[in-house]
Image (cartoon, rainbow, N blue to C red):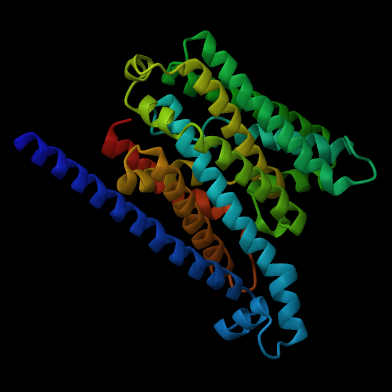
Length: 348
């Protein structure tokens, strides 16, 4: 009877914990919707809540200029922020789990320089689509991001996938692509060099409906694929030996999840440029509420990613009235103090 009582208490506590986690997820989902509306409202031409809601849901009479601002300018930017924030946060959470390193993220592993080099090649050469130049930078950034992340994986595999080695290979990859990017900038015209620099800032002003749908499709596809590995990733977070004792092929899981994470990162940065620290910061907030249970960690990380980048988007419009600062600058300014705090607090 005593054992039954203990089991019942454990089950009750677990269900209580799960209800608490779902409550947090739903709460931040509501906050995310509110922040999305605030993001659409904010800009050089400030809009009211009623104007935004009426335009979004086609309620009542809406001024044509307001409707154009909402649907053609601010909504694509706001939705792109939502997709990119969720994508980078989930990618960062999975990479931190794979490497068992709180400092790991797509940005710190050198993805930004790889994407920047790909975009620079597109700007200077017009490769690969001469008749569709607007596709070139996203396509080449996408390909170079995949190339960089897979290079890190296979180099890390040589050293047994040790976290320290993977991070060091990420630093090597960063400097390699940064050198190539500097070479391209040196050989380019001032106009092209300006395009490259602006792309590296990371800006939601590049957002288009094509980018929103493409990045959104990649995020949904990768999220569905990652859901198949939720239990295995949770077990892996408890340690390699424990995961192997449960019959998990850890090398196979790492390869598959690293591929999916690289695809997530590529889909995020390809259309808006490099945006740092979201993939590093958001997973830590999510772990505070969800622990390492991937069933809750990934959704919470995506929501925190949305909130962080939406907050940065709003801030980017308010810092200098009439000017929208590239969001990559804002996320870096916000992320650096947190990174310092993380190093001091956890001693990593």
